[in-house]
Length: 263
Image (cartoon, rainbow, N blue to C red; front, side):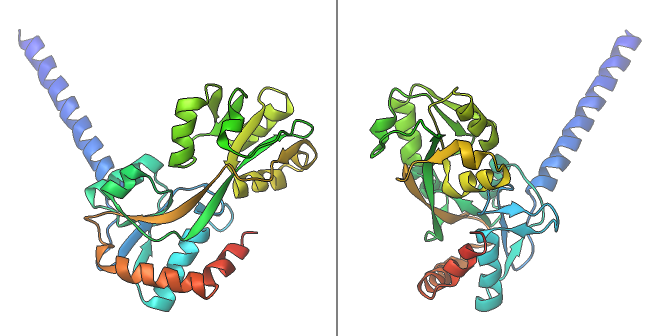
């Protein structure tokens, strides 16, 4: 009996230790707050919206660049958090008020209910890519029905997601765009859907794709890209000023100049 009790005590100690370690890890991941600032983080790898440059290890992209302009030109104290965090955990941090804003997300009904969205900063055209020689007439989403489609993980925008769920029975998620384009080359899919800039960047990085992959001219859909603010986070006092500045930046060509850096 003494041996059993001793074993049980060790087991409880181990469980408590694991719970403490997990809690510490969670706090480390979610505690972004910097006193007096509007804290911002985003999704690493979303070119050209928000990504970490492999050489400089600096956050780059349209959303961090615009955030720096909000700070330098409009004195809005935005602090870009230098930490790579998975997409879902960013929104947990927003829910908990531990992060002020996520830099770069599409508008959805759920996000509008849970968070405060900025005015759209830029638009993101979602395009259809096919193997050269396999082009087809595309005017509306209905034209995709019955074809074998592939898409990357993550959202393509609420309208397209709802249509795909209801109407596209042959529409599979793949790991990345490089895999998708290779599947098109091999005839294993009829079309791939991804953002214009992501598709163009993949073709640029893999030169043979310029000879084998074609983009249909009409966008499948156009999504606005927003800053998404926690309703209990540290950016709330600055949202009105941020939206006013964003509208000014769009009117005077500032955002267009930022976008041009990534063309």
